[in-house]
Length: 170
Image (cartoon, rainbow, N blue to C red; front, side):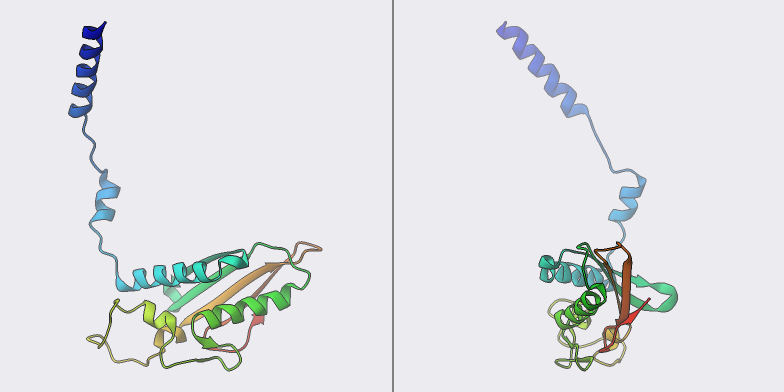
């Protein structure tokens, strides 16, 4: 019995050690592509907003719209509301505040917004890139928020620029 167990174990380990797996072509391609500061910055922005707005019951994403040269922050409120337009405006203002924008004036609280900072290298102190305004990235960022009316389940969507104090409905 013991000999049989030892033989089975030896065969098992022989089979395992000779099995090889390698990444396929797509995984190899992905492994060899570096992450840009821009992509990493969008990821950092999305992660930060999701952590800070966790209690709001949102699905939140950040993406870049190439054809419009716009960063778009999209939030979907998962909780039906009695006053969806009011909730939409509240969420737009909350995202603005979270990223360092005064929602009353549409201006940054300080010379740099958080989204501008997320797109710079960590520990960034001086530039070797193109000259630009401190809030250039914030200036090309739009917000889109959707909420649901609890009575008829219709979706209300509002949008606005990050550097603004207004929200528009469509």
